[in-house]
Length: 137
Image (tube, rainbow, N blue to C red):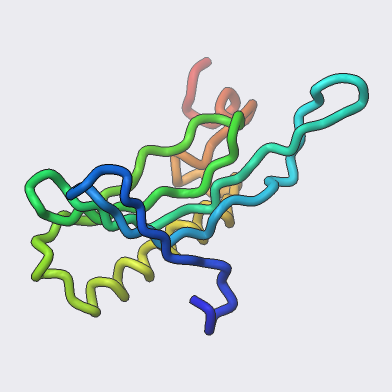
């Protein structure tokens, strides 16, 4: 990721023995949004920038999933997207490359949100939903 100028890092999560995870993450940052807290003060809302997770399961297999970016207190984060479940010996370099490509594609799509795309139902938000042709009276 360094060669591409992306601020990603790899973290090991070792909370529970034999359920460890390796995470490629873009970390967290100020979202550009802030909520007023009183007395002229504002608190920045934090944006989690997304992650690619390799999580060991109870049976020894590896779950690969993507956590899309989300902004705290601004809607609900989307559920993780499961890529696949592998036996450890099945994971080879081409898989890792494909997983990173999928991760980058998904994060880019999230970042490049475009409400003009009416063909994508998850893209429709706000008042426009009430005025779409063919909906309601």
